[in-house]
Image 1 (cartoon, helix red, strand yellow):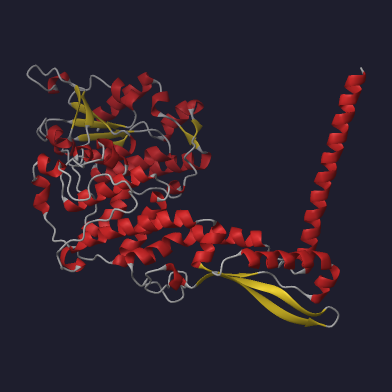
Image 2 (cartoon, helix red, strand yellow):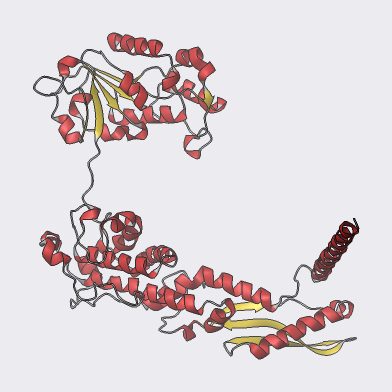
Amino acid sequence: MSEKRTARASHTRASAAQAVRAQTETDKVRNEQAGRKQLGGKYLKSPRDLRNKAKGVFVRRWRDWALDIALDTVTDSPTDSPKHATLNVSDTSQFGVVLDFPLGTVTESFVLEHFETVQKWVQSWVEFEDTSPQSIELVWRQVSWPSAGRQMIPARVLVSFEGLLWLANMKGRWERNLALAKRFASLQEFTTRPVQTDRATASDESEASPTPNTEVASDPSTTAAPRPESTLSASDSVPGFTVDLWRKDLLYVLSKLADFDDSTVNRLFLAARWLLEHPGVDRYPRQLPIAGVDSKFVEKHQVLLSRLLQPLTGRRDLGFRKFDALLWVRVLDPDLGVGPEKCLLSFRAPLIELNALFEPGQVKSIVFVENKESFLALEGLPGTVALFGEGYDVPNFAGLEWALAAERQLYWGDMDVDGFKILALCRQYFPRVQSVLMDRETFNSFSFLAVEDPNVSASQHNTCPPLLTKDEAEVRNHLKSSGQRLEQERIAWNYAFARVKQVLNNS
C-alpha cells in the first residue's frame, strides 16, 4: 500500500512540475506579446527569425537565381519587378544584397520598461555578428535619448547570396540545383541545329549505340549536352523560340527535378537529349531505344518532358505515335452482324475500322449509352447499333459516317448535371441526336431512387450548357438546384427498354 502511495505522490510532484513549466512558458509568450504590442506590432526580430526568413527567400527564389546563371542572360521582366531584374551574371557575388531584414523599431519608453529584454536582444545580435561570415552585414543605428542616453541599436541585416546560403543551411542544395539548371539549360544548344526529321528512321542498331556522353554518368548533375557545331540562330530552326518563353517552362521543370534522385534526373536528361536528336520519332513511348533508360520511364514522365522540350522543338507534342481509341459497339440486329456468318455482334475497334463495317444508310438507328450495364442490356432492336459513349468519350465517335447518316439517333445517359452536359457535347458532333429517358416524367417515376450528386457544385456546372432543348434544360436545372441525380441503371429495365423501343418506332 505504501508503495502505491509513494508512486502516486511521485506522479503528483511530476505533474505539478510540468504544470509550472507550462505556466512559465505561457507567461514568457505573454510577456513577449506584450512587448510586441507596445512596438505597434513591430516586435524585435531575433537571429532565429532571420534564419527562417532566409530559408523562405531561398525556397521562393532559387530557381530564378539558378536560371540567371545557367542561361547567362538578362531577364526581360518589367522594371517594376525587381525580383527578376538581375544583371547578366556568371557568379553569385554579382547578385548583391538579396535580403534586407529590418530588426524592429525600438523606442526609449520601451527600453526603459523592458530594459532586460532589450539588453538580451542586443547581446544576441552581438553574438550573431561575431559568428556570422562577412557576406552578412549587421547595420547599427546610433540613438540619443533624454533618459537612456546615447545607445547603439541593431537596426537591420543586409545579406548577400552566400550569406543567405549560410543562414538557410542550403549550400549543398544550391550547388546541386545550380548543376541541374546548367545541365538542362544546355539543351538550348539544340535549337541551333537544323531539324533533321529523317533521323528517326535510322536503324535501331545505330540509335541504340551510345553516342558521346549518353552513358549514365557517375556524377549525373554535371553532364552537359554536347555543343553543336552549327552556327544557325535559334530562329533559323525553331520559329518563335525565345529564352524568356522557355524560362517559364524551365522554372516548372526545375521545381520537379529538385525532388528527384540523381538517377531519375540523369535518365530524364538522356531522354530529353535523345528526343531532341530524333525529332518526329513516330514511335510509341515504350519503343524508344535510349541507352540507360527503361521502356516505361519516358511514358511515365511525358508531361515533364513535354514541358521541357516543346519550346525547343516548336511541336505541341513529343512526336510519339498515338494509340487509336478502341470504340465499343454492339449490333442489336442479328441481320447486321459482322463476319461471314454475321456472328460478330459486339466488338471494339478504332474509328477507321468501324467506318468500314457499314455503308451509310445501312444502319437505321443508333443509341449512345453512357454506362456499361445499360449498354450491355440492350438487345433485339431491328436496324440498330448501340455505341458505348463511356461518359465524356462521346466525341471519339465523331466522323463515324454510318452513325451520322442513321435516321434515328438517341442518347441515353444519367439524369444529372454531367449527363446533360455530355448530351450537349454529343449534339456538337451529332446535331440530330434525341435524348431518351432523361425527361421529367421518368425522373418523377423513379425519384425515390435518386441520390445526392457530389458533382453538382463544381464550377463547370454553374451555367446550363447550350444545345439542350427547353424541356431538357428545365430538368437539368431542377437537378442542379435540388442536388440530385438518377443513374440510368436505377430505372426499372422493363420501363426503360419499352421507352427506348417506343422512341425508336416513333422517331
